[in-house]
Image 1 (spheres, rainbow, N blue to C red):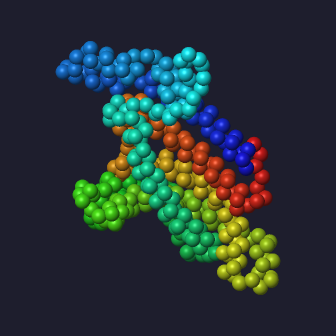
Image 2 (tube, rainbow, N blue to C red):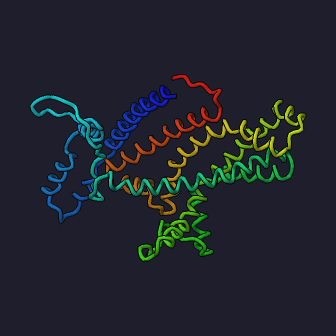
Amino acid sequence: MQKVIITRLIHLVIILLGVSFISFLLISLTPGDYLTNLSLNPEIPPQTIEKLRKDFGLDKPWYVQYAKWLYNISPLGISTDKKFFLYFKAPDLGYSFSYKLKVTSLIYTRFINTIILSLAAEFIIWFLAIPLGLLCALKENKWLDKLISFFAFAGLSFPEVLLGLLALLFAAATGWFPIGGMTSSHFDEFSMPAKILDILHHLILPALVLAFTSIATIIRYARGAFLQALKADFVKALKAKGLPHRIIIYKHIMRNALNPLITLFGLSFASLVSSSFIVEVIMSWPGLGLLTLEALFAKDLFVINASVLLATIFLVTGNLIADILLAIVDPRIKFQT
C-alpha cells in the first residue's frame, strides 16, 4: 500500500506539471492579457500600463512566466548566495491582478466553500442512493423497482444547467429558499447557531441540484451490485442455514456489494468538485467555480491556474482514496505499482 501511495503521488506531480503547462499555453494563445482592458481607459497613462506589465511579469514570454511560476509554487528553493544549496520554502501560487491579493489567501475561502457544497451533495447522494438501490434490487421487476428506475433514468437526462435554472425558478416562486449566495445580507449580525442555520438554508438547494444527476447514476450501479450479490451462491447457502433475512442483507450482501460502490465513492467526490463549478456559477455560490469564471473573464492568469491545479488534485486524490478504501474493505485486493 505504501508503494502504491508513493507511486500515485509521483504520478500526481507529473500530471500537475502537464496540466499547468497546457493551462499556461492555452491562456497565452488567447489575445490580450489582464492589462489589455486597462489600456483602453484613456485616464490611465501608457507609462503606468507598461510599469504594471513589468511589475506583474507580463512583459516576458509565456514560457518565462511559467518557469518563474513553477519555481514559486515549488517547495524547494535554490540559493546562489556565496554557495549553491537547496532549501525549503512556502509555495507561492502567485498574485491576483483583479483582486489585488495573493492567490493563496484569495483561493482559501473559495476552496472551503466548494468543499462544503461538494460534501453536502456527497452526503445526499449516498444517503438516498444506497437505500433506493437496495430497495430496487429487493423488489426486482416490481412496480417500485420500475418507478425508481424510471426516475433514475429521467435524472440522467437533465443537465445541471437546466436543473439549476429550474431550482432558481422554484425558489423565486415559493420563497422557501434564498436565490443565490451563501449567506444572508445581515449574516454578521446573527448568533453562531443562527449563522450555521443560515448557511444550511442557502446550501440545501445548490447541494440538491449538484447531487441530482449523481443520485441517478449511483442508484443504477447500486441496484446492479446488490442484484449480483443477491443471486450469488453464498446467499443460497446462508438461506439454507436458516439465517434471518435481515442479517443476510445487512451483514453479507451489503459487504459484498460495497466493492464497486466504494470505487464510485472516490470517483464521484472528485467529479463533484468539477461539477460544482457549473452549479456555483448558476446559483451564485461563492466557490472556486465562480472565482474561476471571473478570473477567465479578467484573464487573471494565476487564479485560473490555481483553480485548475486544485481540481486536478481532487480528481487524482479521489481515485487514490477509492483504491485505499477498496483494499480496506476487501483484503483480497492486491495492488501492483
